[in-house]
Image (cartoon, rainbow, N blue to C red; front, top):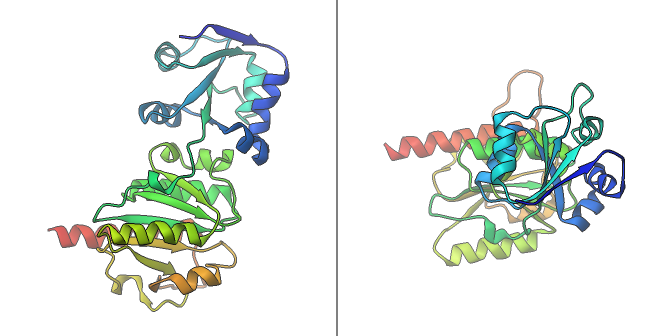
Length: 275
């Protein structure tokens, strides 16, 4: 276990960690992001993520969970003044007990497994990091194998995304990909391996309603930008598009909610088919 360091002022190291909260370029350059909360940090440790540092409140009695974390995780340990930890935790009321500095994994589509029952989600150019986290949470809960975020998009490792995923970021592969070309190369390779992945786009006016489409086959569900929907490139690449029946005054659903509804239907169909 590394020796404990103490930080009580806004020194250069503190400023580096603070920059990870709001500066995407600095997050990318450092290859690090911040995580807090018992469940997210515990999942990160259980799943073998590279926790580079544990920053903890040096002026309070730590919980059993925090003491065990500091005892068992091989990382740098920093005892901080509570007001500094509060700034990193973005909380006004009280400082978090521990903030973890976590290394970003490579944006490699090979991290996403594609078995015969593959179910994946692709989020095209999302503008809201909170929506990315919510979609991660739903995809994880409903048994998807991974999330792909494409194009000029909000950051998977933005604090709002990390927080709204409630730990699912650490249990479900989330890969950032610049353009459709890289995704299609991966899809074609999976198809060549015998997994005939079908690209299913979501649209207000789909080829059919989601209940009438076979989601028991290997599916990559494409969800578009919150305002503009899927790009024209992704629309052309879709094998089929599906719609969710709407009632009332609403013309559409939030992107993460739409993905959740379709993933639920996929789970229902697959369980029914398995009986």
